[in-house]
Every structure is written in structure tokens, then in C-alpha cells.
Length: 91
Ligand SMILES: [Zn+2]
Image: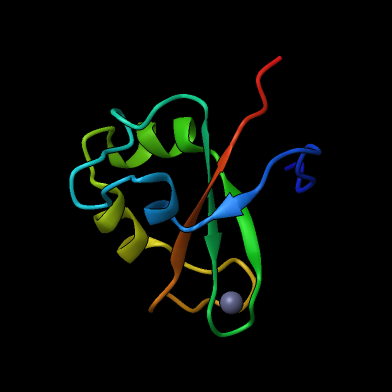
């Protein structure tokens, strides 16, 4: 997996983009957004392939429920992982 973020992608909590985690789903989230999971224990963050995830857990899961399912690939922690959003730069 490519862990590098392209220049110009700023990560911010979803609220900064006025995205409501309890209403927005994997399927409804605008395509320009990329998802990044952040672990509060080891501080690792990793980008999420939202399309692959949509195929495994379904596109109708809300982002709030998705955050609860996240498991850190670094330390295995699955509590309190948070989602960050980035916007893809427009070409
Ligand atoms: Zn971790």
C-alpha cells in the first residue's frame, strides 16, 4: 500500500469539513475525500481504501460505525481509533 500522501492533502477531523459521521456513509461520502485512520495508542495513522472497505463491510455503514470497527495495523488497538479526512487535490 502506498502510504505517502500526495502534496496538497491536508488531513483534518471530519467536523472540519462539515461531515456528519452519524449520517454520512461510505457510499454517500463525496469521492474527493480520502479516509485516514489514526490510532490514539501508538499514534500510527494509515490511509484507508474506502472502496475496498465498502466491498467488505458494505457501503451503507455510517462513518461513526466504521470508526468503531477500525483496528490499528500497528499495535492491534481497536478502541478509540479516529477517522481523519483529506481532500484530493483537484487536477
Ligand atoms: Zn496503534
